[in-house]
Image (tube, rainbow, N blue to C red; front, side, top):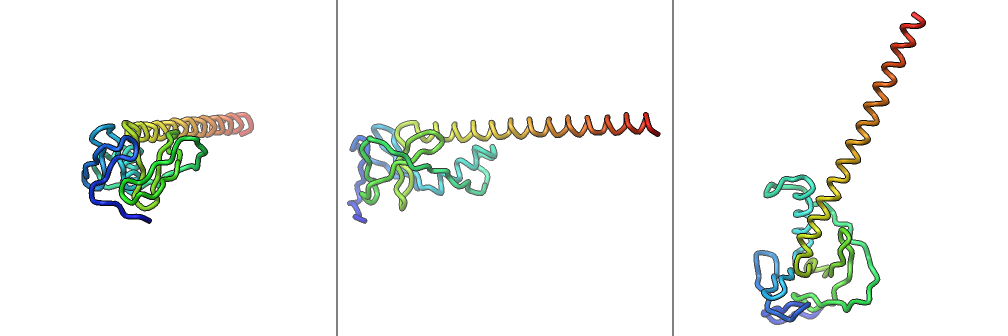
Length: 150
């Protein structure tokens, strides 16, 4: 792994990067390198709607993808980042330093994580309705049988 000088540049547009806490943010194209643990915490906040509260990080489902797009280099260590799919978006991942999101991709990924949470909640509520309906039907059937035979 090659270490770079102290002035990191954007892997997308070669613009200057500003250090914002644990993140590196491009001043030109608004790309951002976010440590993976930070992304996991953000997804957890979105999924639980506990923004700003302490949450357990959610493991990320980073799928491998094949693409003809040129691989980017990590702005921290110059290692070639791997292309991954996160919530339907192709992102670049440095195993040591995090995930590079172009422009508004971080917000889009979090939006997709929230949509996934809502779909899960809807599915659970539908399953609950089915269970309640079946339980109610069984209760009625038992009472009808009890009424007829007893």
